[in-house]
Image (cartoon, rainbow, N blue to C red):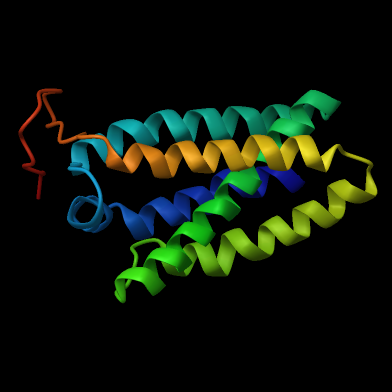
Amino acid sequence: MTFLVTPIIFLVHIAEEWRHFPDWATRHFGATSRAWYVYSHIFLIAAISGICAQAASEPTRMWTIWAVAVQWGLFTNAIFHFATWWLFGEYSPGLFSAALLFVPVTIWQLGLVSLAGVDLATAISLGTVMGGVAVASLWLNMNIGWNFRRGSSETPA
């Protein structure tokens, strides 16, 4: 049950971000589009849900480490939202759900798994890399339209 919370809070975060994050990210990083946001997050939802479901149903050392790494990756996303809010002096779409969900759930989950003797150093290292890759990807030109072609930033109403 511990790990099944992660995909749910990720979906809440996406609901906060999806409408404004692509435009905000384009102003501050590389060009992106709502279409790319949706496409990339379909993969992320599937991966996070699969990892967390596997860790919940078969809590082996490997799946537990991966599930904790995913949650730590969300925690690094919260740090990103706090940092960009401070740096840019404006609301960073996703800030509220990151602050209200990612931070406390990460603390709760780390407390539970540390009692179970999980290798937190490995999980935190993996999660930090995941979070870093997510932030680094913002500098890519991902202005991809709904037809998978570059240059179209049109979004459906």
